[in-house]
Length: 390
Image 1 (cartoon, rainbow, N blue to C red):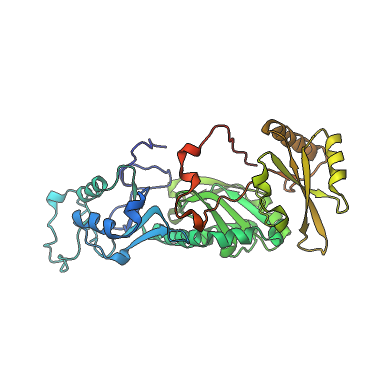
Image 2: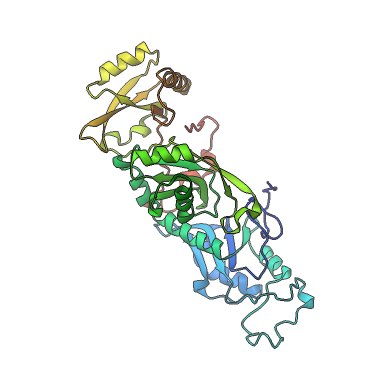
């Protein structure tokens, strides 16, 4: 992992991510620019002007800015240079040794250029200091387009995950590289476990800057398929770069059932009420809040309050009972989590079955925020708000 301070470079010079590799102009299709300020990505004019000053004349439709469903940009831009970039068949990277497009093999010398190190350095100097730039091949461009589509439909995907029909058939897979999309992950699952998963049922997590994270949620057709994926995909070796096979090293995939998604009218604003809560499930259908409170006291949980919720079963006409245990402080919440883990082991509950979880509201942005989000304000960061992920 290289130094992140003022990381202004191309992937053929230094690399921020281990899966990025040097690419020459023979396979170059464009540049991916990240961490651009908002004033740079409101329109394409500033990007066009910057590349024009560096000798690359582009069209407006050759620049794609990543936006959310409200049209707000996220600082990630794909610049396509395939039309104007001439392949460097002489493998000359020194601008003084090039024929400046006068060769007879290049009749369109007034429209095409060779992107040399000098031009790359000029682009770096013209961009903001915090920007990161990568040379992209055709697969990288396709991945970026797919990420933009999925990021645009993220709200719809979250609603799909929160459907009670998928409560027990959702699997969390970690360790994915950003060169893998939905189709590539679907192929891996099919080859390793024999389970058919539609690509639109694979949902990736996104970081706050719009970049694809290494976590993906897979919605299976039934709980049996989910259990098969959990048993087969454990420390599964995959190439770091999908398009280059095993040439660039490997990473490992792990599957869990540690993320539950639930949307129900009875739990509106429940997670806003207090952050000292634990969600449990698997209780008898005829239990009430008073009986569950007495049971919690006998188990030495001592919660402040208990709220029951009925979750419709996917295969049966009945309900599953879930409960929110609210504590008075984070210390007691952590103690209760430890005791629940001990009970799960004592009661011999399978590891892939869910007994408890820490509830959190999905981190989404609203249209009324007008592009100003609290999670972008570093003043709101506090060591007291310790994240808990299970």
